[in-house]
Image 1 (cartoon, one colour):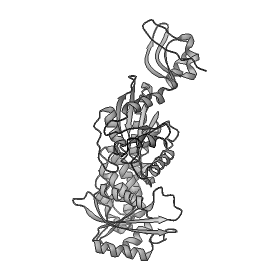
Image 2 (spheres, rainbow, N blue to C red):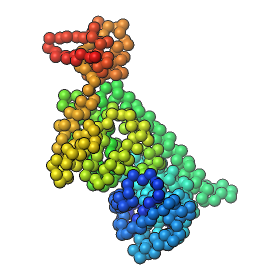
Image 3 (cartoon, helix red, strand yellow):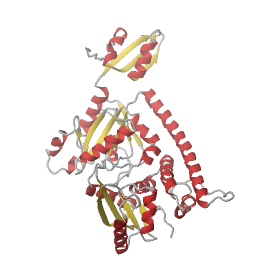
Image 4 (cartoon, one colour):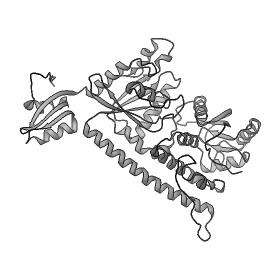
Length: 450
């Protein structure tokens, strides 16, 4: 029987988990907690987890990752529990996967953590952009693992694992060309096409970001570990209807909503895909267009599930991913979510001690929302001063500076020059003082600098 990646399942398939703790590895979570997370991933993907096997090694076995003896133990347990798939918490090399499939029963599939996450992403990709990104990551994952047992995938998937659409087919073979070579060539062609399509998406997003910058509306990205409550928070702040579920990666495609701050100013909040430890590099690369929304934000809200037993490891995983996508320089507010689940009322305030400048909230009940919005407003505008100026035509440099560093609320070209009302960083106030407009019906306060 040919082995395939999972497609949309009509009923749950029985799965056996395999977790390996490698000595001196850089895993953030202990083995038991990492396996608990793998179990949640499996359930999200639609599997029924019926057992697990663990092992500690100094280094992975070159052939089977876990060694032939342990592989036979996995086979025996798989037969006893009648499993259809064995899920590894580690990323397997193509050789590891081939060797393991040779040892296990013929109709038992071997999937690693990366393949499982790709499967979940394929299920949750609801837009064309998300589908393209997932399909690219799937093909880049499959290409080095392509064998005769997998060659039907190109025809079966039609571009995207049977879920994400596409019209890829297998071309005619040349003289002496094997089916395997044909399929590899077709996958490479499909990868090239997908990258070109995603470059168009990336350019489209860049144009949108440019227009947003021209409007000077601040953008705020919600980041955090998967299932931390980002979508619930956005729903409460924006009175939106973003899909929410108690599952990992429930939200895949980015969603942007307008939110008013206490002073009436408008901001744009974007909910993005959740992070996770061991996030596949293929996904990070494929989702570059989406993750750039984070890297271009004016402020990040790091939503943290304060009730999770491994909260510090989850926070570290998010920081590592932000560094990987070059977004670690952006100002960040830690948002400690789910305080309604804490047993002691004072526990939320105690939790703040470990997270400087954090705000404690319950996105579900709405607790702490006023404090959060006020903190966002202060962080966005802490150095900005209200300014109403009339700049002569020969002061084009000051006009450009206001556009570049300031926040323009109203601008008007007049016979005398350019009238601008908005906010400007405190370090620039002295440059505009000679041109300040002081109308009797306005209350413009200029805080002295220096």
